[in-house]
Amino acid sequence: MLTPGEIIAAARRLEEAERTRTQIRMLSLDHPGLDMADAYAIQKAWMDIKRAQGRKIRGHKIGLTSKAMQSALNIDMPDSGVLLDDMFFQDAGDIPTDRFIATRVEAELAFVLKSRLAGPDCTLFDVINATDYVTPALEILDTRILRVDPQTKVTRTVFDTIADNAANAGIVLGGRPFRPMDADMRWVGAIVFKNAQVEETGLAAGVLNHPAMGIAWLANRLAEHGGALEVGQIVLAGSFIRPIEARKGDTFHADYGPWGTVSCHFA
Image 1 (tube, rainbow, N blue to C red):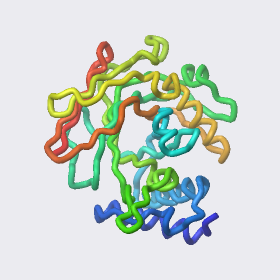
Image 2: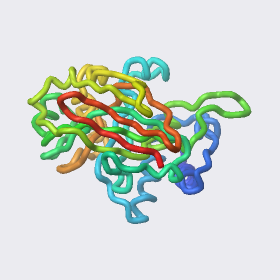
Image 3: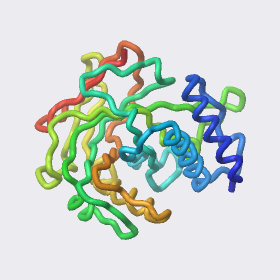
């Protein structure tokens, strides 16, 4: 395990990388023994830096929910990150490209909680009972850590991604909110357009067979450290499409059929 000093130093490197828009070397190369506990400790230390700067936690994101992504990274569970108040952007609004490094976009469902959700035995049905409404969303991903090391050609690990706040950078909420019992969420789908051309399609069943399963997993993981999902928090359940590269000038439009649309433009 990393020492407290090493954890804080790694968090400060991530903060500086984001501020200067300069990617850093993989933490897993600098610390070959880096494990999942270390990665989440670094993430927490970085979020503590953000909170000391005045940022507020508004929710959480869940990633690596598809079997394909888990197999690619040789893991058997999702990961999670934190949503801060300055990560939220207006539907059909502009995303400031100069704030980020290497953006990508994913289509997801966002759960807004009306009651506290705590583990350790949280189930899909507990999530449904605790959810006020569900709404379409786009997640904006960024990476403060290099994906491939230029010298060794080694690719980043899941521990690098977790430390990097699960690659989270922004969120756009839109569409038509619905109550969790108003739809079979497994069959909620999206057609995602990039610059007016269909780029990806998917069904929410790709998220652990049901998107609420990811929320239950997160509540149970947080319970291991005395935490919980709180009233009013927004939780991104996980993407059901592959990440789509986004550059300055790109416009994204996700059509969720009866549940409306959500869009953004990278300015």
